[in-house]
Length: 223
Image (tube, rainbow, N blue to C red; front, top):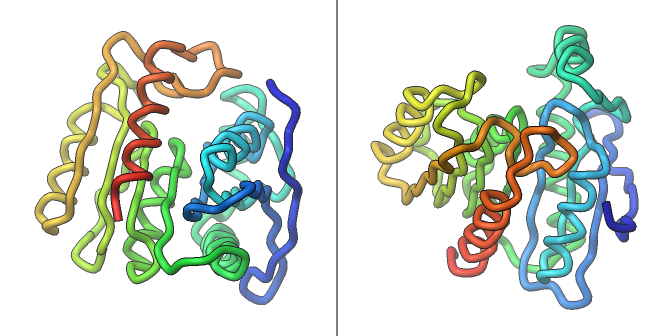
């Protein structure tokens, strides 16, 4: 993992405080919120923010786990069962978006979400449609009502994913399409859940490179 270049920041989150990893480019071409997987805000997601910053994006990853990090699936499950996501996540996500808006120029923002974070990225695109115009999901679904969304959607998925079966992926894709929003989902043969995360045994370097290229192209060309 490369040396991290961003910094942890504090921001208002509802009645309390939120924290996140902020990575700043030399010259900003836009802004992106990154929502991490259930492991917590580990070094992989911080480094991902740095990669986006190197491409010109002011990037913030809110810490949804309040400093806690899981290294195994069992640890992540335990963390999940002890958290009230519906109550604690929204103020941190919304506060993170507001903080990002205050530190970057422009009015439209992108979101990249991983697994658990992908579901919340989809949620945010319907909660704050006037600010969010681009959503990238990695192996995560949430087939909610997208009629209020004004975003375009790009998805990266595995054909043999025990956590997100293809029928659920197609259901999400159809929900977005029914809302008349642009959507393109890619399936990566031979991959499993978490295939993009290089600190996971499921990491697939070839698929990850392709997904990264597609993500950058989407962020750069979608407005």
